[in-house]
Amino acid sequence: MKKTNRVGIMGGTFDPIHYGHLVTAEAARINFGLDEVVFIPTGNPPHKKDYNVTPAEDRYLMTVLAINNNPYFKVSRIEIERPGYTYTVDTLKQLGEEYGPGTSLFFISGADAVFDILTWKDVDEVLNYCTFIAATRPRYPVKKLEEKLKEIKELYGKEVIPLQVPGMDISSTDIRNRVNKGLSIRYLLPEEVRKYIDKSGLYR
Ligand code: ATP
Ligand code: MG
Image 1 (cartoon, rainbow, N blue to C red):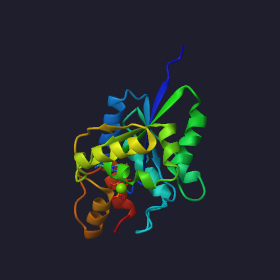
Image 2: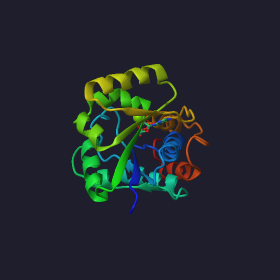
Image 3: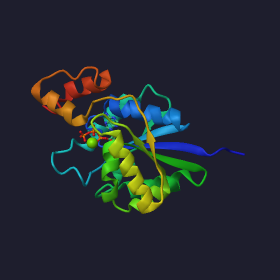
Image 4: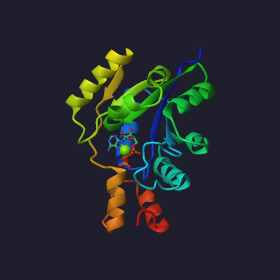
């Protein structure tokens, strides 16, 4: 009998992808015994209207460069190719159909995303389609995260599972700001991605 496939989904804008994303995905892979982790760069994120998000093709390519040396990591164009706004619920539905009933999906997110989850489209459906993992992230207190998980449990009867990951106080926003100011971004993200940013002139 074929065992159930366990697939992690790491959604993000990845503008750019950095070691915080990679370490979180790897910790989830190990802790939840995942067969693979699929990175899914967003197409046109509805909640990020406050700055001009980098073209999806650049964000996709940087993600490909970043995960290249991990045989368990993949990148999907599913959200990039879907017209209109991106919603996690639609992605989970589509992936559930593509992988079929023998697959369990694990959605990997950082603590900050969990604080927003109650504002997401069709939260209850999202929680039904996957096991939702909440990774710790520096600056987002564990106590508050635990309270949030309790609230979600009371509202939807679903467990969001906390995951302790090595703290990386790195954000894409900070990396963009650093590039813009001409500061070094070495060691915050894979060297290949740093070179891509340098050559393409992104964030300057
Ligand atoms: P931005 O500053 O543009 O919001 P970001 O660094 O938060 O970028 P996103 O692409 O928004 O990166 O994040 C994608 C997912 O990765 C989210 O679930 C987020 O919580 C998680 N994540 C990002 N950085 C970290 C980190 N340093 N540690 C743990 N999780 C992280
Ligand atoms: Mg973010």
